[in-house]
Amino acid sequence: MKSRRLTVLCMALLWSGQVVSADLVEPSEPPQEEKGIWAAIAYSQTDTKYGFFWGADKRQEAKDIAQKYCENAGGKACNVVTVFRNHRHWTDDDKTGFPYKHCGALAVADKVEHRFTPWGVNSAETRREAEDLALQACEAGGTQCKIREWVCT
Image (cartoon, rainbow, N blue to C red; front, side, top):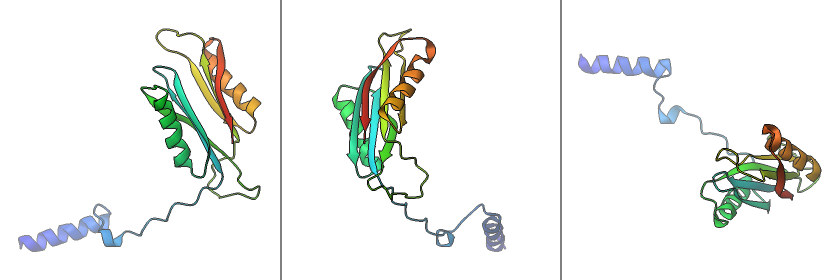
């Protein structure tokens, strides 16, 4: 009797969606190829160190190398703060929805305010636009900032 109740309970859980057998789950779709020339900027807010990389074939490659360059520059808390890409071929459209923004920029304040150094980052289709957006983000608190790094793919 105990075995039958357990079987009924298991079937009820299975039908309710609470338990899913591994052989009933459809395999996930393989990740779609992301086309383009990838770039990334990593930044360490605690010590204002940064690293960047452009020219990668894959998004993760750009992120990993920018992170490593930031760490090699002495960054103790590096994080990738922007990733962007350019078309490798003008007909590229991988249908992922990730935009083709060709340039990125990092702006950092000249001085520390309350143990925090304001900073901003952004990407856009042109260097000028990326720099302007990064400066606006950095200077939103009223501090003076300057571009520390920019990169276009």
